[in-house]
Image 1 (cartoon, rainbow, N blue to C red):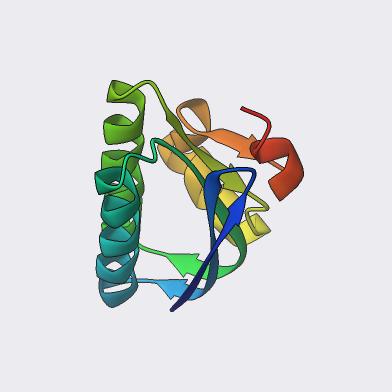
Image 2: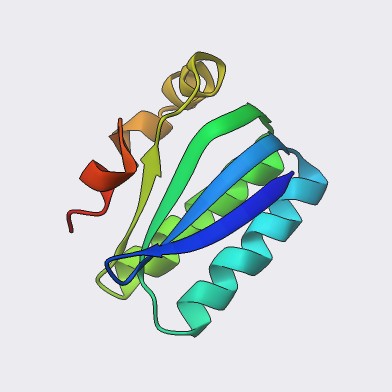
Length: 109
């Protein structure tokens, strides 16, 4: 999986490309934990390029969501592919995460 980070109005935006499997989840966790460690509690994930997510990836997202919200922030997800969105709906994650169609909309904290 590839992770590209850029800043949008002071908010870290991470664009993901590929599979969020065990190895990808570890890389994602490191990137997001680094952002939180730097004091960024509002985070945006652009998931338009994610073709697959497994339980390790879901666990990482849930952990970061909890840490962000504990600090008064949020983890917002953008452009879930139909396959990934189906997984979110099946396990009920669509009830916990705020989902957006565009990065601009997600960055309007």
